[in-house]
Length: 185
Ligand SMILES: O=C(O)CCC(=O)C(=O)O
Image 1 (tube, rainbow, N blue to C red):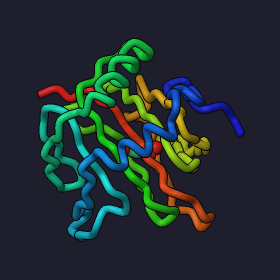
Image 2 (cartoon, protein in one colour; image 1 turned 45 degrees about the vertical axis):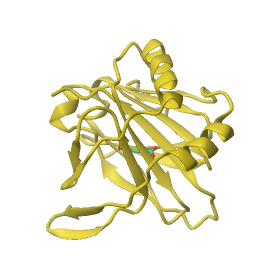
Image 3 (cartoon, protein in one colour; image 1 turned 180 degrees about the vertical axis):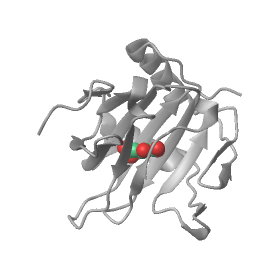
């Protein structure tokens, strides 16, 4: 397997006590399951989500009203700003309840994120495969993201690549992902 493109930086085990953070966030966040409309077809998102920050966020035809960022995540956001040198003011949390939950190939390229956004993505809970595809060549990479891992996606990661967490038939427990973003209005 060739190394990931440089605009994806994987830092395994970056979060201290990831199990405790997972348990606290499962309890504390206001999880919801949205309807999404893609190509005129409406269905339930195959995962639970919680959008936090100061601004509403519209993607896949859904307007997400923001919840406040809990103190637990505000501290983490400060550490991520120091680690990556990028700004963050919002967080999208995803909860994959089991292997049937997933996110299809996409990029985080909403206009409010600006050109060449840097996204800091933290994984908690069960290990899952993370797929990356280069648009120009179709080349693909697979990365295993485990509890406490940080993935920083910067530079051309959102313009030239797509990423996904596919469904798996393997018996897996719940996984949470926190993607910190800088929302500009
Ligand atoms: O769960 C992940 O690792 C990725 C989540 C993601 O791609 C997103 O929220 O846009």
